[in-house]
Image 1: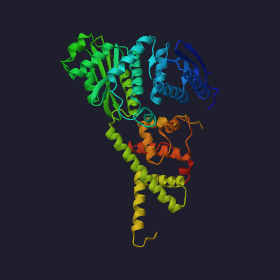
Image 2: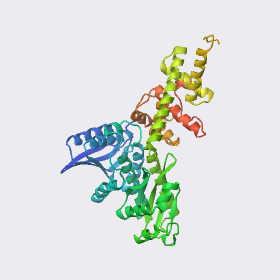
Image 3: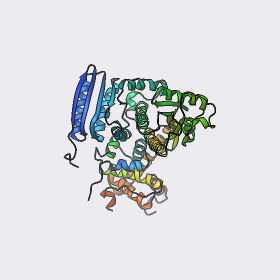
Image 4: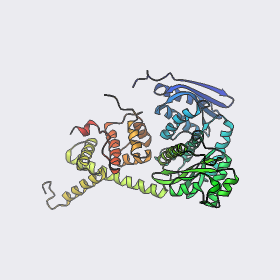
Length: 374
Length: 83
């Protein structure tokens, strides 16, 4: 790939009071990514109270560009400074592009839409409802090097982005939220406004509603017109009281397990067309990918078990490789290649092939002749 | 012949329905020495993996595809294919 095909990349930094605004133009990839990294580093070195990344003029951004932003975000997180991503024009298209990136790098912290103050308010208000109290578990530094799960704050940020997108793209949507099961309880980690937050809370309190059912049963629940709804007698009057007339809850899954729901609310009965329902399913799927990548819904015990299992497999495969090294007089990589070829030849998983090899080596060793021709 | 996209390995990962964390664990099980972050860089084509690393990743993905009832879509290096 040549860099000629990429549009010109440019970056400008403006300090507005204590806020640094870094505006990007063109396409961030290759050299552009290094320029961006250096620019962000320089801005961070001046210790602004916050950094705004303006991507409204950005045409595209690739993985190296995202890594430059991810690195800056990490530095800023350590300094307790936020990185806000602003995209005032052509919002939807840009965000759609950004969403792919959020999925890739689990990075996007928050998107500042046209009304930045509201956004700031929401961003600050939301974690109070959704975040687990107290930071138990690995320390900040340790968490950076573990494979999973990812930083819950970053995940919440990505989910807030999905909420913004769903609200903008699903025509019947007056409000959107994401509920997640955490520590066995449902909570709202992202919501487009306070009414929606209240709607979710009402469902958790009454223990019923499309959001609760979708989160637990892992299926879509659609209430096209609440006035005629009979499934949730305790919750429905409260929703109608808040002016909500239609609800569409799509399940979120992490590693095939239901972990929450994407909830879309409308003031208009029969607001959600077939097209809206399909769009909701797409957003729910996107959110599910983010959650799966984050290892959401995986308990500490399951995680510990999985790590233990992985360590055991690794030991088995390393031992088999060692046996082959000794037997064939080759280096580790060549021995591994041999093992891999054997596994492919026999159509057996690598771990099983390694086990077979260890077993036969043991039998040889324990045999009466202790010889290769035994 | 057209070159495959740089992030072809990550495309396979998504098709295989593996999270980055789970793929890294599988790679680690096979004896992989790279960090999870390096693995992501290999997947996106930002860093070029060694032949050994490439084969580890390819096999981790292929074993997953077999689990899902599929074949071995991810190509191994010449070192594996030659013999």
